Amino acid sequence: MPNLKVGKSQERKKSAIKKGKNIQPAVKAEQKSLVINPVKIIYTILILVVLGGIILYLSGIFDQPKISPFTQLPVDEFHRGADLSKLQEINQLREQVTNNPADHQSVLHLAHLLGDSGFKEEAIKWYRQYLKDHGDEADVWVDMGVCYFDMNDFDNAISAMTKGIELNPAHQIAHFNLGIVNYTMNNLEKAVEWWNKAVQLNPTSDIANKARELINNHSNM
Image 1 (tube, one colour):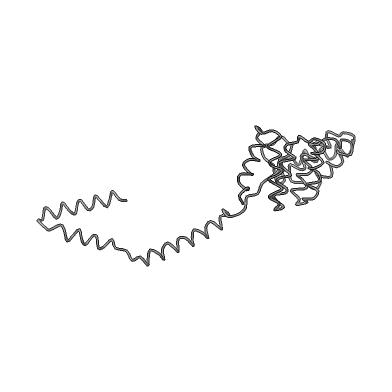
Image 2 (image 1 turned 90 degrees about the horizontal axis):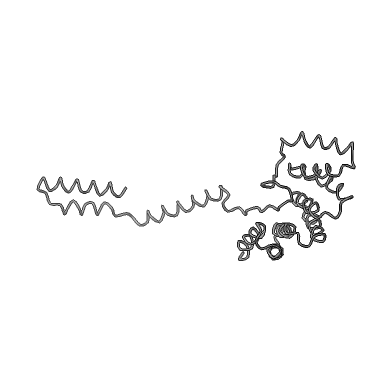
């Protein structure tokens, strides 16, 4: 620490004064001891830079961030793994809708739970079952599109979300999600176009703020 070095230097100076010695040679000796070989400095810096790059690479800092679409579900974030705590409820609903296929709300609830718990393919099955009788519900089309997205079936994801917009042209989440799908497909220009439309639909919403953030982060790429 700098202060400790200064303190030690002052102690040596006081000791020299007491003994009646000349201080100058001692000071010059200390100055000479501080001279460092510039070649060693360069090698040290290069080694640190290489090690730092390796650490950053292994820690995943250079990885491209993954952006997730939004669903209509009232959850804090979109779960990507199976939620084991919901399995019992899912099994009960499976039995319920099998015995009573006309219970459309239970069918929809089952589809939501399956999608939220990571069972995307089965969720799509029940979404389609529900849409046979309620094909005019834009939210359901968009949520089914998110399941397709998570299965990397981008064509069906776009088709389902576009259907949601046809039914509800002001569906902001559908516009935002279509930006996500196109971004994942490396179609950045189209993604920004969809995000701009999402902002225009409701500029003060949280979705609009998220869309602006994505536009600003990727418009100069």
